[in-house]
Image 1: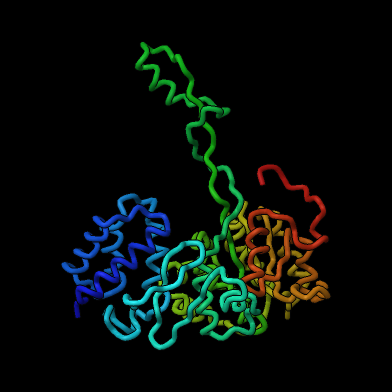
Image 2: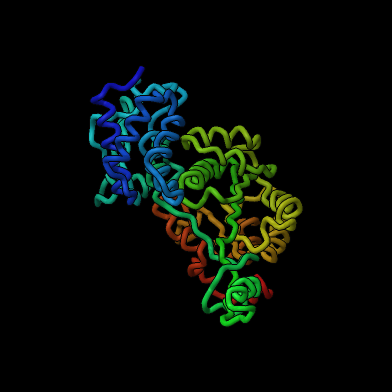
Length: 395
């Protein structure tokens, strides 16, 4: 059933205002084109509406990321597409007659959700959002974890840069660009009057995540997978889960949908969810099948586990040593380290500890900041990691 003129005007005005606050140059002309496209095409699903928005509201591909983030926050964050089957006027679909609170880091708007409205006034001291973000992931219900998705979208996973094999022009480059010099010499009678220079391009290092989904880590694994799914920059990560076996979830998490659907898809792809733990065997499988073939070479490896090992801890140490020789940096997330009295006495954690560049707790959303800093090469968390490591050349 098509939108009424009043609801269509409210929808376009609210969406356009959110995009404008997010930094896109959205004017009345583009908003009018968006409204005309909705009227003509009559989109029946959120994906069709998304294509209308991309076609009419953005002319620069560099702005797609901002538009997608605001669109996801408004139209995908709180409505079940499968349930409403694309009917924008159905109960529980996006509300267009009520002003909505701001979203962290993007300045967009978020909609109401049927009979359950969870306002998260980000940035207000003592707000419900801050209290929820400070809660331990193990104490959150599924509904509370879903409410954290908006805050997680405001975070960004970044890794240190590395030099690529491609080059770019640079006035202060150390290498002479011979091809460019010959092209320019054709304009000056074959005499190269100026030697253009070039330097290697830089690109972010690959992020590889190994997440423990055993029984003791199940609530933290759900939160971490949702964080990887929502946070900016994490979509390029290679994600593996392990308990009694190693499972690659990169493709399962590639399709953009609601976080709850992504978690359900991850649970279906990993048959050993909430089972026992064999860290050493999982690390060996990763090193044999993926790590030494290049996936971990020069990468930042993030391991999420409490270190409880049912196998031989010596295998954990041996495989961590192998991984250490391949990876640029290893960050271990252990929720148990939130206690100031914690000591790495458990067999698996004790064996892995010397090979980690940083160990952080990551037990709540507020505790994620040290994790993000550790990924970029910040100061190691524990004094045991303060020693200087001698890295082989080219690492």
